[in-house]
Image (cartoon, rainbow, N blue to C red):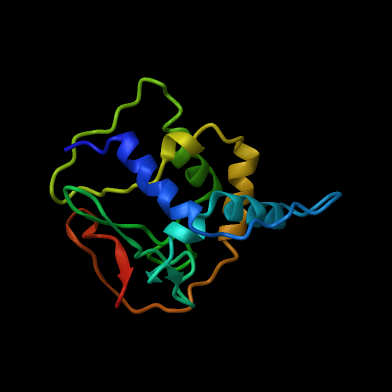
Length: 167
């Protein structure tokens, strides 16, 4: 089965258009981490990478993953992007940037996924065109985020090896 960009985009837009109070970019020079926070907020990362209940983010799960998207063929849970061991703790800045830049190739097509393969609705191709310095700022901010709730369980099918927050 293939993840079709049109289906992903529809789910993604439903997710980010629901809320997020954009931070205003402060006038003048701002720090790398603060700029990363601004970009993360503008991209609405918290909306998809946090557990929610009835449209509201569950306090303490910010960026911790586990938000479930019901797709026609499976349940897809988003990943943890905090410094917790199940998140991006082992990512170097270069690896984080490369994870995005790997989707820059216009010939890229989503691979066929098996029932236990990792699946995501992350619009990688949309963010791949960001400047490396912007991605580095996002990485710098995410490295400051600590997950407050760390009760984990194995996730559903394709995300089996990814951690998710218990309900």
